[in-house]
Length: 172
Image 1 (cartoon, rainbow, N blue to C red):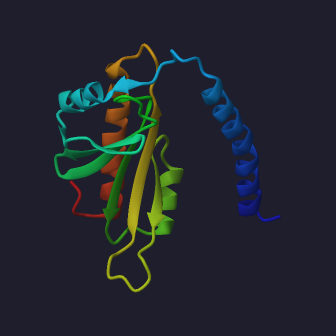
Image 2: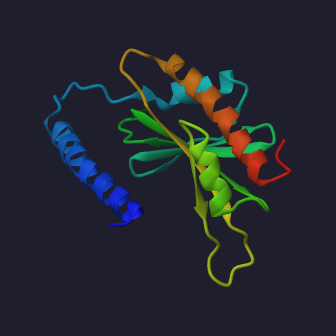
Image 3: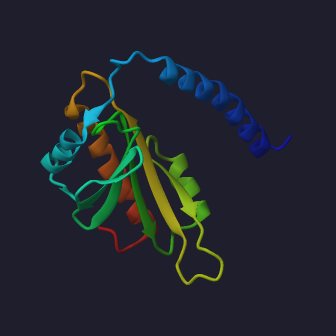
């Protein structure tokens, strides 16, 4: 069996029980369970970090925040939101540039932790170049308040800028 097939099979085998278990836990959670931080506290923490945050945009149980971070623009997606409270978030940014290749992104991933990137190939026949897309998932904890976002915000900002500089000379 090739190494990539073995890795894929192992990942699938490990993911299935976790997914089923998590779904069972969610279904049997008591009615008064913690449902996350209020969106206003999350946006307030981003603003306190010196970021400019757009008005929240909702789609189903997700809320999207466009964030302007100096020359960078990225999106913070709030997942599993109920009544304006969200228990987990995902940071996402996309970069285009001459170094946005599968090989360079793969090497970048191998040298860093926490934030991971993938190559988004252009659509066939499109003049749009491929992109390096970075993502960072963070689970929020009950009792941690909005301050628990401080370290993830700093990790994200540092590594998103690093990926941008790696694939595009225009990123400062």
